[in-house]
Length: 474
Image 1 (cartoon, rainbow, N blue to C red):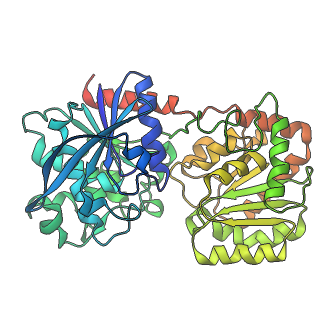
Image 2: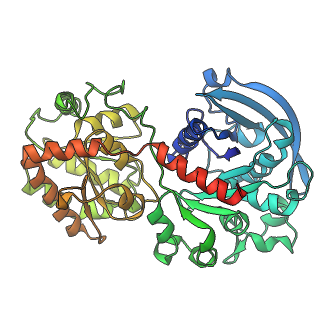
């Protein structure tokens, strides 16, 4: 079986979020299960030079963009055993950053069409084209309309994965003729709720729709989570499936991670105490081994639950002998809130603004408790990394958080959970965690249980392979 994994970003070449981790780790896991999987992505100018130096030029072609044709260079490189193809067009991709431009609709309509146009030139005819998020959502549409009956493209199946339904690729009708290149009769595939919606087109045309956790697959059928797409998803629920993401356990490994202060394992936790002491020193907090240290590593935005946190944060710090470290950046009101709290509680709270991967690893390794009370969370990576490093998660029961963190009240779980999106329910759950921390023997058992959780890509790869075989008739 051959799978072409189409994504707008993939580590280590370009990354802005969790999709890049999936596009790196899942193809590697599939190859270990003897599935031929290759990745295709744009050739951004931000790709580091040492990685560009590994690329080989294959050829160049032109790709239709509505009524015109645009240059498309095709490059390839090999990374960790996986072949990557890169779509080159400097007008579209020689820019700072990956997204957020006025012509993103055109940039990714070009990319979605190029994914199909390059197939005759790469010596790899896929059985499955696996598309991800709105940037590749037009590929199943174009395949259904223009390629399914073309020689050399027969019997290809398309899969579309929704990583975050909030971002759908919504634009005005004026782009249909100038950018998307669909006739009035064909436009019905992408028209929805009085606009052009790329994701809707993929939901309509792909053979299978997946999301990144089983719970999220159920949640997006509810208007509260769906950002307007619940109607069409309910109509096509028969082809919707949730498959839980994994993490790269070779990357996130406290026994080998070069970013942390000291290595440790579930069998020998002594290094975790060293990490806590060093983290307190780096974050300018008193070095107190006995105090429970909570951590937050997140984008500081509302849907990550920060309205809950800000509602009770002062009460939490005032009434409890704890330390909290916060790493992230985002909406100004939350950045300003934590700055003010740090001034008020300099011995209890330490804030670092920005995206600092090495510091994030140190925080996972050094903290005792990890707080992640998201309003919605399609899958979530941080809670799985926290488990791997023995930082016990406190989460709200939503999306992938519900599928990976289980309340330890029954003596079998790996964290602490609450269901209602309510600040004092969250606060009560934090207090339960602090009570648990005070029982040193029981807490060590919980830490070891958390670190033993298997959130590797092995399980997810098996589910994807079953799904690929189902839709391809194997």
